[in-house]
Image 1: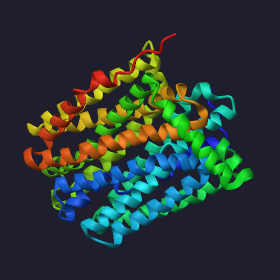
Image 2: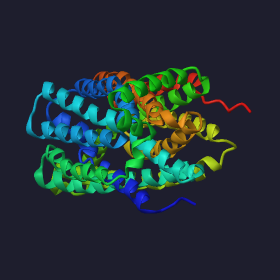
Image 3: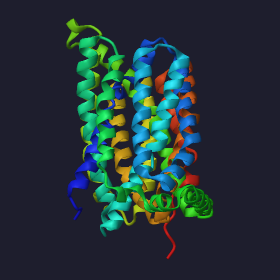
Length: 415
């Protein structure tokens, strides 16, 4: 049974606040409102991911060597500056800068907070329930996304512009930054204590030790497959998930309800759909352990869910192309559900095969691989969408990722 103490609720509140990204349900529609093509949108996403990839490992080293709390505080500060640029300015160049600042936030945060959770469980002798525990905290994150969708819908509905969602997102991120200050220093990580006692000499020593451990990870084939399995699926998901927005907008404008509201009815449909979508995601996040228990091993659960997700993207593309948009929307719901089932399983599987001392670095490596996939797939998806339409683009990108399954299939651990 998972320990539901004060720190458990802090982890859940962090997830809730972190996912109050009011721009999420409208990000592609915002960029389209700014006059950008799908390819330009894909390039902006790619800039964000490439910047995140470049920063991922150094910030993972920073978290392991100089303290995870400081890393998280810097993450929230970077996000806030990014949101303010999106709100106050309007140009491709400045939005590229905002994406880089967002990347700083992602790089400082990714892997670090997961490592804090896993470290906390280890210190409290509860590591055996890591999949269930992480599933609960991720469920809180998805609940935050659900509430965020309704608030975002109301903001866009009354402002009649997508821009407002960025300035509104600053508020929960300031609260998240303050929350980090209340985390116990024990979650800073083992290495941070050496830094305080031996100053810069300790920092250099621990950077060197972390680099050596990082290199050793690439000598473990099973761990590498786990990294690529998780990263490629997450990369596909991140590259295609926002294309639900134009599908929903077209669907909303095609149904004979709320006609008197004009284009604003699409805002209502999108907000309500994302609310339901994230509630379902929250439920499945909490059921990750139960889902994996239905299979003989967690590796089989990871592999089967991988192919189900890829298939959902391909069929959703076909349904969109032939204007069966309700089926495409349902398949996106399935894709979101699978993503939230898989994430706790992936984190649990990787944590079983990696040294706890370099947990943040290892999870950052996995996250960096994910950003690489997104950086490659996002412009391709944008180009395909401009050239062939969103439906064909979804199917093509799904087939492309599915072709690599044999290389990322996770093998059973040899006894």
